[in-house]
Image (tube, rainbow, N blue to C red; front, side, top):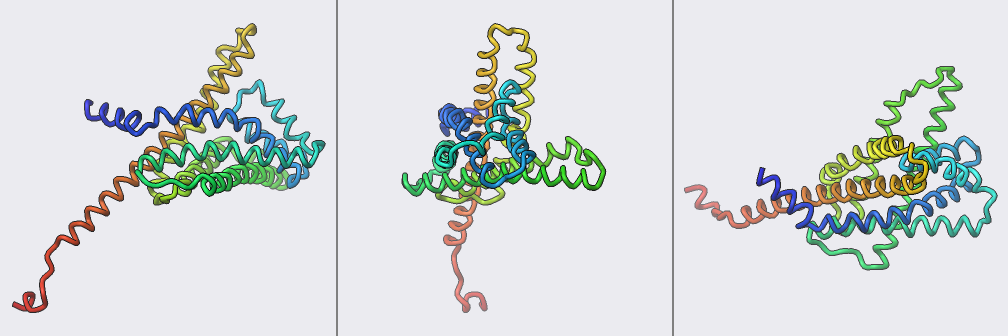
Length: 284
C-alpha cells in the first residue's frame, strides 16, 4: 500500500502532472468556441449538405452540456452565411488555441522523459498541424456517420448501427487520436506501444466524462435560479476532467517509454562490458 502511495505521489506531484492539469484546462476552455467556429468554417467549405453540418455539431456537442447543444448546432449549420474572412480567422483561431493544448501535452511527455523540446516557432507550427489533424478527424467522423446513415437508409435497415457500436468506434477513434498526439508531439518520438498504453485509459475516460457531467446537470436541474452557473460549472468540470485524463495518459506513456529506454541502455551497457574472447582462446 505504501509503495503504491509513493508511486502515485511521485507520478502526480513528482513529475509535475498536478501543475499541468490547470494549464491544459485553460487551453481547453479557450479552445471550445474557436474549435466550434473553425469546424463551422471548414464545414462551410467542404460539407455542402445540412445533414453533414448537423453531424459535425453532434460531434462537438458530445463533450458539452445539453443546454448549449442548440446554440452549437445553429452556429455550425449557419456558417455558410458568414464572411469568408471571418471563417478564415475562425480556422486560424482554432489551430492556435488547439496547438496550445497540444503544447501542454508535449511539455508533460518531454519533462518526464527528460528530453529536449521543440523551439518555440517550429513547436507551435507542429502543434498547429496536430490541431488540424484533430479537426480533420472530427469532420471525418461526422462524414462517416453521414455515409453510414445514408447506406442504412438505402438498404432499408433503418438504424442498423447500434448505439454500442457507435460508442465503440468513437472510443477507438479517441484512443488512436491521443496515441498519435502522445507519439508525435514531443521532439523525442515515443514507441507506439508506449503511446497506446497512455491513450487507452485516457480515451476510455473521455467517453465516460460527458455522461457523468450529464448526470450532474440532470440532478441539479431543479435549481432554475442558478441554471446558468450550473451549465458553466458543468463545462468546467467536464473540461477539467478531460484535461486530467489526458495529462495522466501522457504521463503513463512517457513513464513507460522512460522504462523502455532504461532497459535498452542497461542491455547496451552489459553488452559493452562483456569481455570478448579471441578466436585462439575460443579454440583452446
